[in-house]
Amino acid sequence: MTQVGPSLTRRLARSLRTSMFVQVLCALILGIVVGGVWADVGSAVQPLGDGFIRLIKALIAPLVFCVVVTGIAKAGDLKSFGRIGLKALIWFEVATTIALAIGLVAGNLVRPGSGMNVDPASLDASAVDEKTGGGQLPSTSEFLLHSLPDSAVGAFAENSLLQVLILACLVGAALLHLGHTKVPAILPAVDQAQQVIFAIVGFIMRLAPLAVFGATAHLVGEYGIGALSTYGKLIGVCYAVALVFLLLLGAALKMFTGVSLWKFVRYTREELVLALGTGSSETVMPRMMQKLRQAGCRDDSVGLVLPTGYSFNLDGASIYLSIATLFIAQAVGVELTLGQQVTVVLVLMLSSKGMAGVPGSAFLALSATVSALGVIPAGAVALLLGVDRIMDTMRVATNLLGNCVAVFAVSKWEGALDRERARAVLDGEIAFVPEEDASAAQDKDQVLASASTKPGADR
Image 1 (cartoon, rainbow, N blue to C red):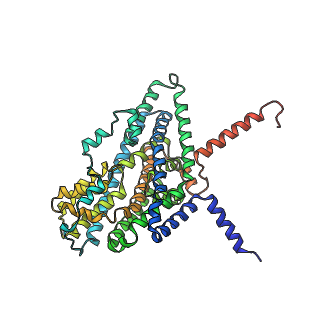
Image 2 (cartoon, rainbow, N blue to C red):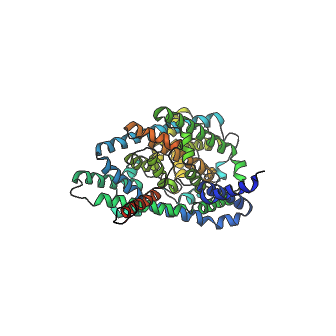
Image 3 (cartoon, one colour):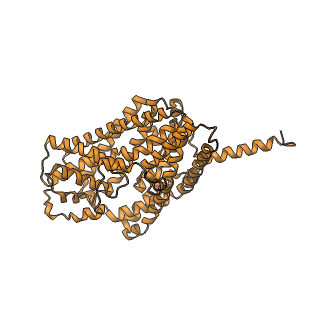
């Protein structure tokens, strides 16, 4: 008679030791328990999550630069790179508009703020200024101007993805113009730097379970479960709309490319759980770039579309902002007309493009929308202070999957998608191998091959 217990225990122990998905999932559960039972401990371990995010962010700018430069140089066609950028922007705008529209429809049907009867005078408007640091979202002209670097070093120091992208495009274009004969050593050096960065990412990713534990324990300890009872209807509507949007996005992806969004979610489950646990999609950008490239997307498409999407394609944030605007209006007893709701869409279409990297950006976008409408008290934005952080899970997951879908869609549109490889990878026929491990294995094979050709080597 076989002993199921010990065998199962060994399998679980092996999974916990070797699977980052299992490790992160366990850390997530442990963080919820610790934050719920010992709130003070949850606040004390917050630096674990913050430190991990800082380490990953430090590598994003140089990694994007290397990927884009090598992508342009290897593609050998700057015009195709320009087409990819234009198609990506078109896709982003269409997706963002649909997300905003679905959010408004759901907000009108469910009416999450109806019946709250909040007196705006009772709200502390100064708390919003404290949350945003008294800042404001840049105007369209300021946003476009800030996208242009005034210092090559400053673009990396500020971790501005758009500025780094522009520098990378200029360097890639220069390499194509000069040709490999004039600058033969540059491209291999950039490619090697990229491999070094991926290796560092591999080291840092080993700390992911600690980061998820720290971030989750802090979130639960700070906000507790009380917000669920007060804002339960708003939270439910936002998450339900995000799910509907992702289902529509998955259907469009399947029709357009033949790629299954569900299989992609299963393929990237480790990265998704990590992003949800830390509340930041930036923590998984390097690993997502690797997985998209190994899933059949060409280097130039991944290098341009994914980083640009982090600034231009905030689908989850768009859903939240549209529903939150209606929630605020309904809570204070203001009924928005159809014309005013159209104004909401137009304002958010512009303001959402400047949100990335701005502290308290959701509140700044809401404040700008409320000011444009002129019928909702400005202090009413403070209603969302107790629920904003809880919405991060929805925003992060929707933003991240929306950007990955954009990479597949634009790659197919540009003819830069290997559909057979994508099918094989997502079906599990080809296992994902981190690029740092693949490079190490390749170097080992080269050493063994060199040794086997020496005189006296075993044949």
